[in-house]
Amino acid sequence: MVIELLDRVLQFTCKRHLSCDQREMGRNHRDTVHEIEMLLSERVEDRLTLKSIAREVGFSAYHVCRLFRRVTGIKLHQYRLRLRVREALTDVVESGRSLTEIALEAGFSSHSHFTDMFRHEFNATPSSVRTDDLTIRG
Image (cartoon, rainbow, N blue to C red):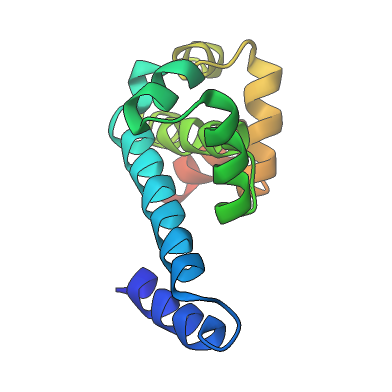
């Protein structure tokens, strides 16, 4: 619903400045990016390659990267990292597994890389989130 409302606002704002073809192209681009986002979120554990993502949506890898950044404002790689960190959050909070094991399973090359991305995304380290969660439960 939020996306639909934003789409209406954008359509209203851009009506005066864009031809119908340009508006439709923008909508097609947003639809393609939405398809990419859905694909990535549904198959986050598959660790899809850029080539396979591009194949799924029918564009070149270069075009997919450019289009994704133009529509969302972030790089596709950054988006994928954010998804992986968010998926790992549940394991950090609910499992007793080591953070290194969680990091590697989430596709990060090391515990420190995972911690850096986690801190960037949640403004806290995985260990502090785990400790805070334990004190809240206890």
